[in-house]
Image (cartoon, rainbow, N blue to C red):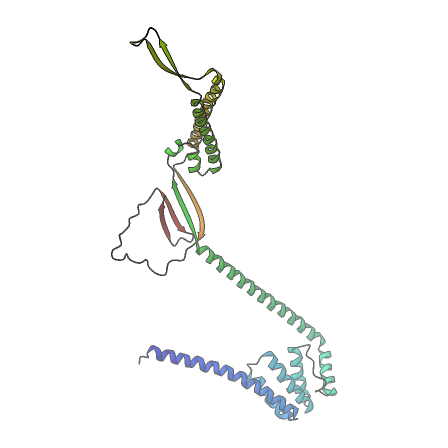
Length: 340
């Protein structure tokens, strides 16, 4: 006989439901039985209470609190019936379960209270030993509970760390640097190498020197004047000859000399700074530089990229020298990116 999947599931669900109902019904029956025994005890039906309590105790499957209540009703009922053997048996069992248990003096008569206290005094040494065992058991249970809580916290912390590690991505960038950039002025080689502070110094120095040299060049040129001279009497068919000459007037000679010296000095300093920058860039040059960084993994797109619509032109992107390799920290995936 072959059972279908839904029939098997329904059968298993029915068995589990019956078991749960049975446990719930047993708990309800136990509470109801204790309530009935209490009510019978209050009405003075001591023989019935004693009999039913003994039967329930012998049946077993009781919690500690239920067992204490049953021994109490059975012991007091036996005491009222003058059955001292049963009274001692159940009341002693009661104080062995809970050495510090106290009867209610408003419900229990003084004679029963006195008898119960006498049983406790007669077994004081045994009860002290039981108290010590209960204390040790309580401490052990407390330690076990603390250890379970600590283990749960450690497991939760480990799970959280694993989630963080699994969501992290290590980006490995391989940068290719051009050798020719080192020969460019204004700190280009230093900027390419990531030494921006030194690059700014070279750029500012060379820029100031270049501008100073250019200004001095034009200022010196502005000192030059033209002068026309006419020679007459013996030159040329007309008897005169006219020519133009350029030069610096005597009154401007010192100023022109200062501008000329500044032009050449600034120019020479510019080329000196340029040579120093090139030598420094060549000394620190590396063809490839590898760098790594850890970032959070990007959430993958939930929808695919749309296809080009009719009429749209396809675009081709070529790879460039700078590449980036993506390695997931847990070793599950990898990726490659190429850019300038």
